[in-house]
Image (cartoon, rainbow, N blue to C red; front, side, top):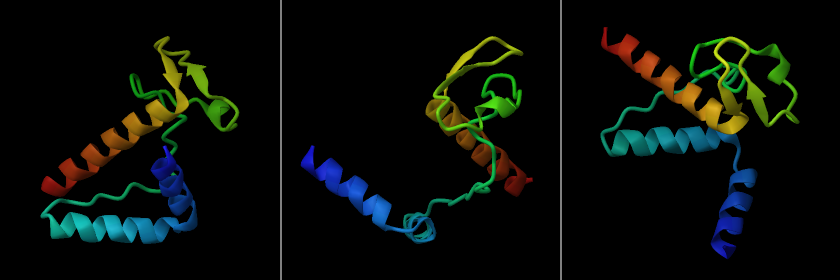
Length: 97
């Protein structure tokens, strides 16, 4: 528990560009591919099931939302992580073609 608090404090102290630089370096070191997603990609606003973009989710106080198109319920953070994964896969496939 104490180590977890130290790690989260460390992450708040490190700027995002430095974290991305280290991740890219480590990925190259281990022979992996590093794909960076645009920081303005609306990952928490887009439904990970049907792709509907919900503009009402811009407010950070909205933690859960219901997609009006497909009816699926989304947790903001889980939905965003799924969308980031899918966007990374799309970019990876485009690089292969």
